[in-house]
Image 1 (cartoon, rainbow, N blue to C red):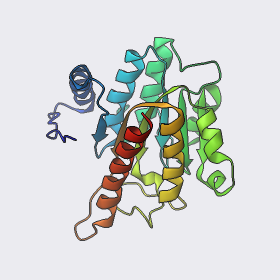
Image 2: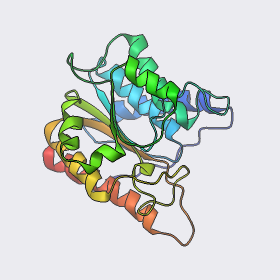
Image 3: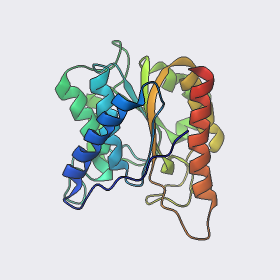
Length: 235
């Protein structure tokens, strides 16, 4: 197990930062062989680089599994198309522009789980494209894990925004939403996905550590640890 040094993306702005991260991630994939790479970040915008890298590497034969409180499908937010609220819109556009799509006619481009906040614009994007959403209130009833897994293609990239969790479990995040998922909700779905699909990579984002409150940081670290364990067990 190896933790690489943090990456300095410069101060030129978000678009060149994401482009720089993508170039670094491509190089890392070439060097990593069959190692499992987990990106650790604050801003969810960073997830666009590895998600698009894997889509191109696999010819579009990959579904993005998004754990999140928000769909992040806005076209612009705070006057920027590279805001964290726009990351999945950029990923979706990349996939649609490449005219590849996920594996199989029934697979979704994106499967978003734990959602409990979205705009009308984002709702329309979901309706118009192959985006499967499991809302947080639907997770209170049986069958949601099976529904999420069935919507996935054979290859999966996981992006895990920690505001998926209820704020009582994960208060140290920038945009908390009440009514989120539990630790066991996350592990139930993750274990099934790692067992039944080929998980190619993952990231964990939006942790905003608070001095004196260490449980959130430990939870995020334990989440990475569990992903490594599931990958190792089911590979």
